[in-house]
Image 1 (cartoon, rainbow, N blue to C red):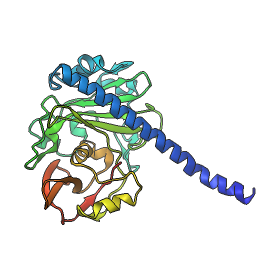
Image 2: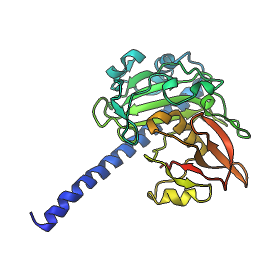
Image 3: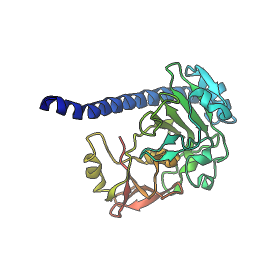
Image 4: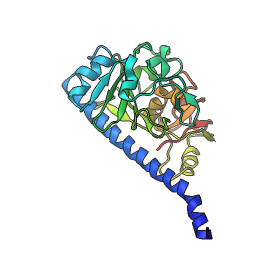
Length: 281
């Protein structure tokens, strides 16, 4: 094999990885739009908190606004392409994990929230394109308190974990598995976010140094906004988070919002104070 052939063979895995990454990112954006648009329509026709539980929301609210090929109870999620076997999926940094099936499974200290039931079970559905969804519903979600610290738990209305190829590999967060989080609005519209979260913590940073650190990972990477940080907390375990994290959302000239290590506590944080950083795109 000539030199050119050897170089081509060495580069092929990188090319395939790049193609796959673009496919995953495209799917994430499509799902964000589809779920976001459907939830907005649900909210226009009723209070999004009107359903009794995850099953009721999917069957009697969301199914009217988005096409579903099939729905599945919490006990039969695999029939909808959601792998629920013990240690059968992978976190964003390739650690073995188990798919959450209750709100309590999503993140540590879910019970600290005042307006959330940690025991609430998820419910599954499949779209005609074969994408699988594992939906968690909080019927008591509330608006963000912009002026003071609060628990993230209370603002989540929906957290939807998706898998674009069902039970097939790689079954890894950040690849074929991702998430969309719907937060109760501060104004009129529901806020839907789906950040693609980098697989490991970046070096310690503060509000001022964080943007340049994220930029070194690639042009699309940035410091998560407050609502993206909330969405990250609701997927804490599959993202393998482990620290306090900064956001890019300012409160005033001296402080910005940051997330407490594993409690879901969002609190004002001095912009000059250091903390961990998990970049997103």
